Figure 1 (cartoon, rainbow, N blue to C red):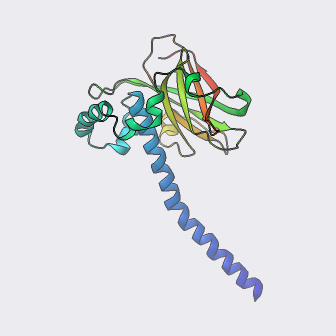
Figure 2: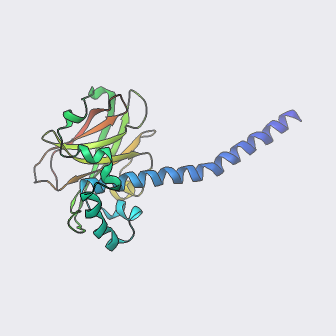
Figure 3: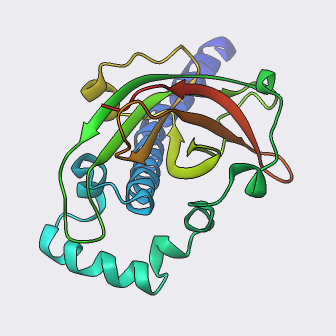
Length: 212
């Protein structure tokens, strides 16, 4: 009887966990969607995959973004907005590359424009891991000539980016979506994971040798 009661109690716990996974997963996906849209906005790339999650009204969006950017409102007041255009090492100390793992798996051109604030660029998709802390890094940044030109978002929930890019993430690792403006053919860009340290540090993960 006691054993049977324990089995019943275990079944109740499992059922409760399954019911709570749905809302938790939905919340995590929603947070990542917001972070990805923020990265696209800050970088100035008009990626409809990210932005449609947050701004379904394209006309209203096109008129509001320049105002928000000019007045540093909403996402444009975020710390990530302040690092764009600055030398990487003036913002984040460099970490030992052995402290992280990662790779760039896909580069997709984004060719649409939406008003003066958003234009074409590149969507970068890959995976990343903080080996020292055994967790996802805070974010990912993109540099050219040592200057930060793009930012990204990290998550274990990369749909629809993974399907769109046909990327498979290593088991137990997280992925990233990052953005960079359209750069001249042959330009070199470096990707860094921003590790959760005090202060946050930049760990090199991969290089993109040619933008399409």
